Amino acid sequence: MDNNQIEEMIGLAIEQLAYAYTPYSGFKVGAALLTSGGKYYTGCNIENAAYTPTNCAERTAFFKAVSEGERSFQAICIVGGKDGVLTEYAAPCGVCRQVMMEFCDPETFRIILAVSKEQYDVFTLKEMLPLGFGPLNLA
Ligand code: THU
Image: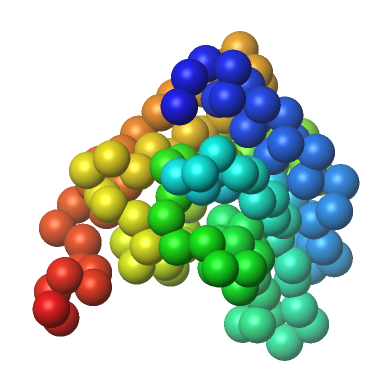
């Protein structure tokens, strides 16, 4: 993953904010997921009147990709903010980190948290989910 790809992912994630369905929280999240083969899958959060069926942007992107046959991923970029205004990093929730753990190598999978194309930080999944429980624990 090079700097051009990071900028591209940030742009794609920001575009997703327009599609976030957030009538309850108003907190809009966009994600762009990069496969090992170099393909992008995007996602937004989709809320629900019953609250718990709400799907986070990251999981939307993962489930779109996995449902199309992808199983191997390099990185995900996440942006988010109240009313879609980006002022600080929107870190992935615990459930989304666990979904990443299912399909990604915690040592190499990168999580890019961004406020803009100029302001971002890159973390590994291992940094965000230390001692994570994953498929290898059941092998
Ligand atoms: N949200 C995400 O989309 N991703 C996260 O990892 C954190 C939370 C969404 C869910 C809900 O629609 C809104 O942000 C407020 O929690």
